[in-house]
Image 1 (tube, rainbow, N blue to C red):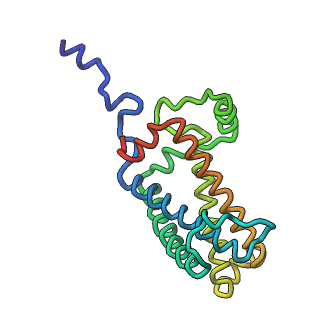
Image 2 (cartoon, rainbow, N blue to C red):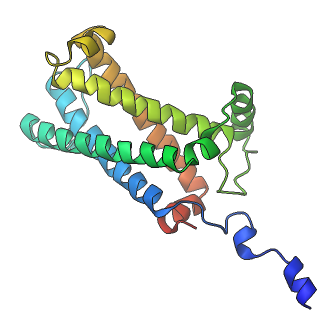
Image 3 (cartoon, rainbow, N blue to C red):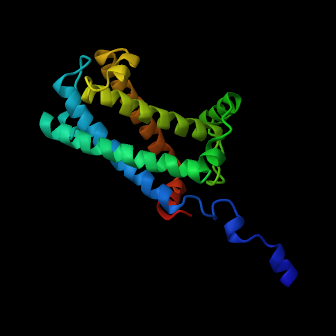
Length: 210
């Protein structure tokens, strides 16, 4: 009987039953979610005050009520995103999680998993492992967030960051970069929420860690 018991895999060793997300990851994840929501909603209100294109966002989807209020919300969320993002990146690098979860990242594997995902054949049996599409998406959103912050610095303190402003092509170019980086970030969030709805246990894992 004891030999049989030892041969049985423990629940923690089965896919989906082990520790998936440590506490620090869950805390930084949800803090990032709050920061992105506030940044986007207040940013849409700021955009409406001086639109780049021939459209405006519905006021009901914006935050701040007026331009000054939206700017205050935007700056507060910016500091949260930057501080929390540094903690997230630092701990990912320090613990080796970034290397284990996101690398290697090969274009051929990304295309293979993307085709499988479009056919509805991409497995999510083990939430402890990211497929190539997930790895590419998380690297993409990290780089996009950095671009949002850098272009936002130019819009906020253009005179104080002349080199950064020039690297981004000038103030107006930075406005366009900021807008399209925001749009990419929103697109990621939409797909992320859709995938969470299709595989709801990933949400439970991000809440419980297991």
